[in-house]
Length: 82
Image 1 (cartoon, one colour):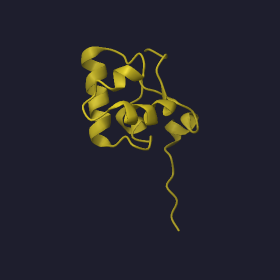
Image 2: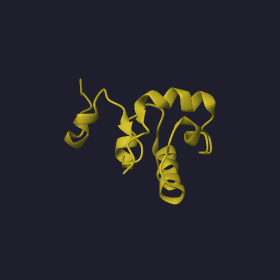
Image 3: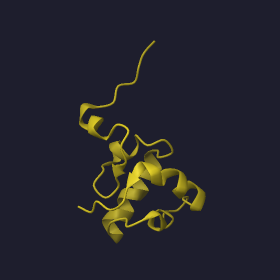
Image 4: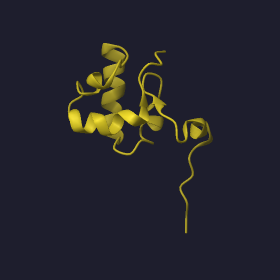
């Protein structure tokens, strides 16, 4: 049986919300429901439109509606702006 190991650089975030405004693609993808395409969209939005302030900003991303934003928001920290 092989266990997936979280990279050491991500271990401080284990069981804690991830700061959406400073996380890289790899860290965002540790959240269930965020794959490569959504991670890229989040990074693009952050770079071109500024930091995410709240759950409503998540819904500006194509493919993220109210239900998906609500399921992701407990795993994201919005108020830590770089």
